[in-house]
Image (cartoon, rainbow, N blue to C red; front, side):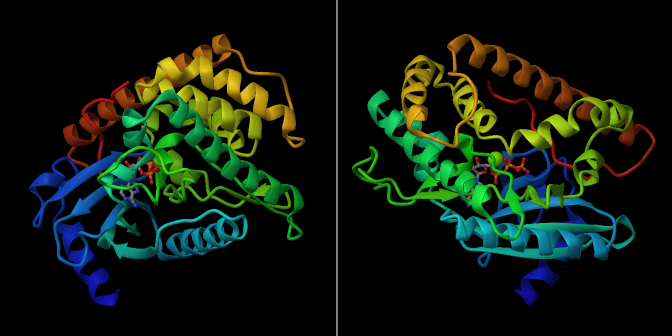
Length: 319
Ligand SMILES: Nc1ncnc2c1ncn2[C@@H]1O[C@H](COP(=O)(O)OP(=O)(O)OP(=O)(O)O)[C@@H](O)[C@H]1O
Ligand SMILES: [Mg+2]
């Protein structure tokens, strides 16, 4: 790992975040997140990893705090019965420009990624997969409910955050008991005695400076709280089917979840309706589209005054 860290430091130093495909060796972007960009770097020791790059750290102390929290988050997920692929966190100094963190996560086959897989499944299989995802999610919330150390973990269960470990390349379809792997650990939301441990400034840094105040005011708390509330997490999972272009499953999933939740003592709140899901999705899609446009404007402003813009942005979000 140490040799790899030195190698990544040199790679990062030469990287132009606008053109990862022109880096040497090149990187291919697998996914753009709100705080991380997930890449495959064409290097013999790295090709088996999904490399998640987060360039926003200002000091080594910040990196250390994040690394410790990330480790704690993984420990609690494991205790809650959530499986995560092998993961290494690599701090990467960026000279005057602060620090990056690279999370190296063992890469799973593309066909096992749940948001890819759903396009090859029948509705019946899709509901079975959703059931497995929600059962795993409930384990996290059950864990939160009884945790003696006063810890609660925030959890983003949307379909793009999962892979099915035991999917078979040749037969396709969904195994009768899907072995789920959880991929998205780069936002380690964790509360201790009710207090959030993840520094929200890390999100705000990648936001355009002209929006920071309004985000602080309007979104930040809402977005960070969302992941501690089972009903909202489930709503987010259902609504995300629109983004993943499986919106035609929404009515059936709403019905199914409304049936399932009657046997979930920890579930609080009303039944879901398709209308509610649509409204939520439209709002969410608007926010992220607007936010991406603002970040692009911000990137342009940075270039105009000759300042480094360290984040990678997608051309557009497919919805
Ligand atoms: N281990 C992995 N193997 C293969 N592909 C992966 C892996 N981890 C992530 N990906 C791909 O990258 C996408 C985004 O990954 P992830 O959910 O970890 O980050 P994110 O949601 O983009 O980031 P953030 O939490 O920072 O907003 C996934 O939906 C998946 O397509
Ligand atoms: Mg994700």
